[in-house]
Length: 272
Image 1 (cartoon, helix red, strand yellow):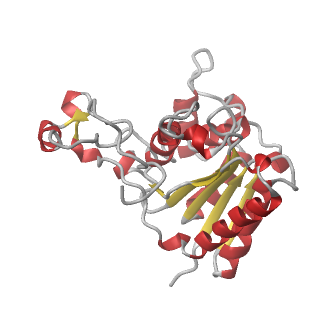
Image 2 (cartoon, rainbow, N blue to C red):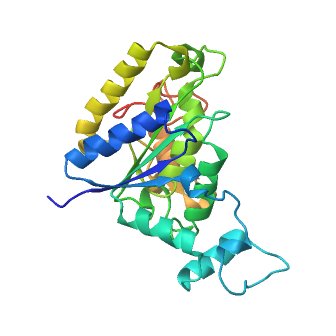
Image 3 (cartoon, one colour):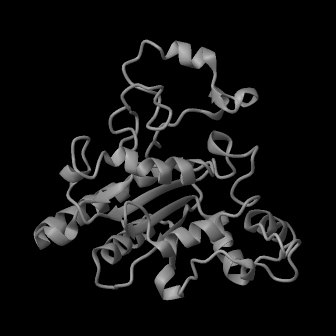
């Protein structure tokens, strides 16, 4: 079996944090399995989260009406992206698995990680209008979120004050990872490490280390295939698919729910 390459995109300021420990556990366990692991430590790199014309070397096509997506796609095709973006795209192109390790900020990723997503996943390189979702450019790669929360698991339940974690994760896992074609593995959620004992934190880390032993063989989460939608009708679900699902109690996915209850745990467990 060929050596697997793993990219960890890591966002935390402190080397003594729980996120740092989770990142180090992934590096250690995956390396011991024979994987080649690279880490993009965004704070250490002083990664700039702002998507601007500085990401392009040379002249832009239309400076007066600058369009970041179109300009970076052209620069990518012509080899004129900045050295920082070219290097991060090299790492991503080489990777079989990508792990995003971060503390959840305001129900999403920290700004520095969102900047990595905005700047590195450029049009053409990571997606096109024809190559997205199940037909996406990265459909041979796996990706996952591994993150800490400030709130307890009960607060992210279907009757909790924060709302269902499956809904929280839909924009990240469907709108970014699946959009680019990644096979999305179930997230690793470390619930509120700052509010539990050191022993409980150690238990969570040990569970992560155990999961990492079989991570490369895990089945991804389920999403509705692209060919289930009719491009002639604004990419709405095809009538035959909707009719087939009419008698079901739950919708197809968190987003494509058809006015029904969302399928429980579909964004945190595979096979649902």
